[in-house]
Image (cartoon, rainbow, N blue to C red; front, side, top):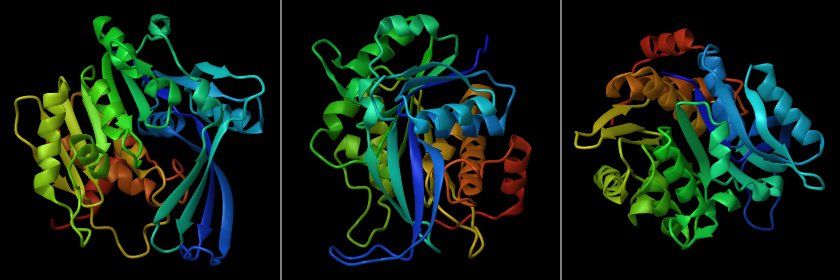
Length: 337
């Protein structure tokens, strides 16, 4: 019986700033526009899901402060029918926010984030009694302090939570934020032991496996992506691993073969920004898993959903309905690998 999708983790307000270019250290560049938007795994993924299919029950879990950003983000979720009863308002805390620096013309972006109330979100196992959903997706590892906190038995608090969710028949899924540092594998691998689905980009998946995703020229090392997928199954992923990158997507079921689908070939000038593109791909992937799509359809649908996201500077405005996404699949040809 399908009861919807719950997303737990980071909630932030994005301040999207379009710039001419990334300056060298100590140099100046111009900001062309500034706009507020929702950000973080919880609002991005859930609002995308609500736009794809408003009939699915959706639930948000996380922590915000008691400021205007909290009101802004929660209202944005409620407006599209998302249940925000699981969002805690932390007194005296700032809602997490991120300055998103986006280069005009290319959509390339860099993030400067303030975690704020996200650091206070550390759900114990009792939290699962409130989960009526079929799937619990958690993100982002490496950005949610409560998730990453050490646990003597499970490795991290998130791993303990995922194990408890699986024991209650809830399918579990994780996402990771692209980050640097020697804690990457220490925080990601424990969670993989207790997840049904792992959805990451090429940097995150290869990082979890201790591999380079790209060569010195920036070219994708496909063999390493494939090795990373199998390494995640070895780490404990029960069901499905999905890896996305600008070139395309990869999916594999436990014991099966890897399926790869290239990204859409979008016309010049189409891309307005890439913030939230990974969450858009993730939302469409979760939708495909929830609806029982086959592997090629999941990747094709998720690629088109990510392409919709690229048409807007913020993280969610570009998302379309399922019918419109499928029209995107039919309209544009695919890139060559």
